[in-house]
Length: 525
Image (tube, rainbow, N blue to C red; front, side):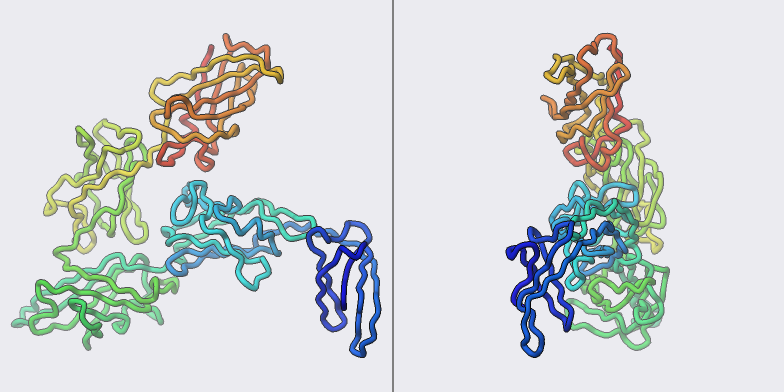
C-alpha cells in the first residue's frame, strides 16, 4: 500500500497491515472530522501483485469515557519508594511526564503536604513521573528521593487526559497507600556484650540486632537463621558464625546472636566488630534493603541513644525523634535551653516511628518559644548515669544538645487590629479598600486572590490583590465593594482561606503555613 488519506491527499495517516486487516492512524492536524469522512487507500496489493485504489466512508464515534485510576501500589526499589499508578486507558504524556507535576499530590496521614524525600513545597513529585515501557501509556511510576517514613499516605491525582481525538479529563481521584507494608526493614541498632562465663578464661559473646520492623522467624527470610550472619573483627575477613551459635528472637524487632564460649573471648578491649546480614525479611516478606547490609556493632557499655531531630511544632510543644527505641521516656531528663532561661517539660505522648521512639513534649514552666525557635535547644539536664529514659535492654539516652527546628506556624501579632484604608472608586464603579495584617514573624506571601476572603457591611467583597507589606511580617489585601459603600460605620471581615495548610498562600520563612483559624479578623469602623 502506497498511501492512505482522507478528504484530501494531504491528510495522510500511518498504515498498519495485518493479513486482510488495515489500520490507519490519523493524528494531530490530520484527525478525522466528526462527520462522515471518505478514506482512500492507494496501491492496495494482494499476494498476486494485483493493485487497486479503494475508498470507504467512515463516521467516527466519539470516545466520551473518562480515564480512571484502576490501581495504585507502592514498593521500595534502590532505597526509594516507587508509586505505580495504573490507568483504565492510555493517557496524555504531556499531563504526566513533567517535573513538579501538579497533577499528582502526596499528603501524610495527618493531611499535611509531603515536602521532603522528592516532593516540592506543594507536595508535587520533584522527579517527573514516567510511563512504564510496554504498557501503552497506561502505567505511570513516581519515584521518591529516598524512602518515605513508614505510615499511610494520601495520593491525589487530577487533570489527566486520555489520548482520544477529543480528550476526556479524569475526575479528581484520591487513594490511601500504606507504605508500612512495603518498606524494607533496616538495622536500627546493633550492640554486643562479652562476659566471663565463670569457667576459667572462657567468655561468650551476645550480639543484639534491632530492626526497624517486625521480622520473620520462619521461611526463606527468617531472621533467626544463623546462616544469614557473618562477623568481622578489625576489618578482617568475614567469618561464619561458629558451630553451636544460637539466634533467638528477643522481641518482634530484635534478635540475639549467642556465640559459644571461647578461650579469652572473641574481642580484645580495642577491637572493632562488624556484622554482615543477608536475606532476612520482615513479616510482610519484604527483604532487608539491598538484601545485604554491613553494620558496626558497639559494646553495650558505650552505646547511647541519641536524638535524630527536635522540632518545635508550636510555641509550647516539641516533637523529638530519638535514634533508638525507648521503653521509658522521662520528661525530667530533658529541658529546653533558651538564650536566658531553661524551660521545663512534660511528656504528652510517645509513638514508634520506623522502629524508633518519637516523643511529644510540652513546656510547663509558663514560657513560650519565639516564633522561629531559633535560639532554643533540646537538652539533657541529668548526668548520663542518672538518665531515666532507657531502652528495654537498659541502654540510656546520652548527652543531648539539639537545636530546635522551626515547625511553628506564623500567627497574627499580639493585639493586632485590622487596619483598612478606604480608597477611590475605580473605573469598574467599585470602591477599593486596602487591609494590612501584621504577623509575629517574617513571611512568604503568594500573590493569589483566592488566599483571602473579605466582607464589607455584611456583603462579600472581591479580593483583587494579595501582597507582602512594607515590613517583612505584613500582608496587604486589596479588595473592592460597591462604590457607594462607606467604610465609616461598616463592619469589615477578613479571613485567610481554610485551604492555606495545603495551598500555602501565607507561610513563614521556614515554609510553615499560617493557621487559617488564627487569621480571622473583624472590625467595626
